[in-house]
Amino acid sequence: MMLSRAARPALRAGVAAAARPATLNATNAANYATLREIEDRLKSIRNIEKITKTMKIVASTKLTRAQRAMTESKTYGQTSNTVFESAETKPLEGEDKKTLIVVCSSDKGLCGGIHSGLSRKIRRTLAEKPNSDLAILGEKCKAQLSRSNGKNIVLSFAGIGKDVPTFADASAIADQITSLPTDYASIQVVYNKFLNAQSYEPVEIEAFSEEAIAASPNFSAFEIEGDALGNLREYALANSIYWGLAEGHACEQSARRNAMDNASKNAGDMINKFQILFNRTRQAVITGELVEIITGAAASEEG
Amino acid sequence: MTAAWKAAGLTYNRYIAVASRVVRRSLKEDKRIAAERRGESELRFAKWQNGKQGEVKNLDAANAANATEAAASS
Image (cartoon, rainbow over the protein chains, first blue to last red):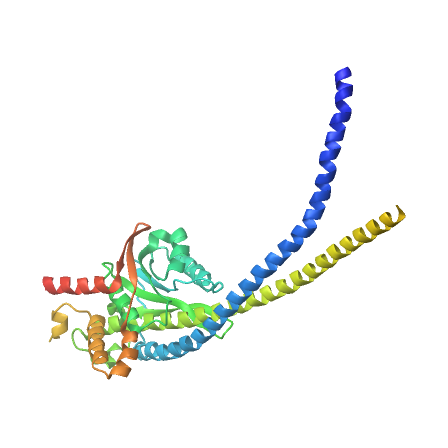
């Protein structure tokens, strides 16, 4: 009994002493800390805004170059496709032959959902035709598709998207694809089509196999000697890949510009919000301090 | 008739790459620098088997190796 009674007040006092200054300190510290915290966050958001703004400007300047490259490359692709159009070439309808899908993405991110859009389209196509093989250009789609469809990948290329794609890139890729051991019925080049500065759509262009070209209804209208057909096929594949790469690149730059524009806008909004919060908190702290001083002064006058 | 470059094991794309390189190199100095940047390619590639990525190799070197191999076998 004695012990417990003696112990109790001390315990209570200890608890009270521990509790009160702690809460007081906490609110005080919280006030000052939030001010400091808000200031730090404001600073970091300002920095982020600066970065995204710069990236937007970089993307804008790259975009004009990319668009020029795109229109130029389109003529390559379309000219080489005129042959197949006038020959009325159709992809071969054979069940046993495989299709190769060439995916034109790039190595870089921070450009919204254009890579994921491409991956989604590929997954849809693969769900219909699970026998197809994939050749992936660019790290982004490789990372996404290797998780879901790793078994279908036969080739992957990296180093795309640093600059405007060149025809040398495209022809080197086409060479590597034609040297694949499997004989494909058709090759589809899937890329993001540039609809306008805001919207893109993943579409495919066909690059036909030799048999498909030879089997086309109007094939006899052309005079082709010996090996020329194989050469044409290789060249057409390179053209298609170049087209896909260049147009995909333009889309990516445009998407990055938009993404960075949005990011800068959001950062601006956040800066405004935090500025108001910061001012309010600062005022509250000043008011609190004034009240303390005045009450202190009044108390000492009385005494 | 088979063309000489075909007999040497080059693909058509390789052939035009070599041809365009020659043209670029014979341009005048100022134009050559701009044009040669279009001929560069720094791609790397990897072959995949059963969902596993193979060794990453330089694409240009691999294509050149392919060409010499084809030339040796023909």
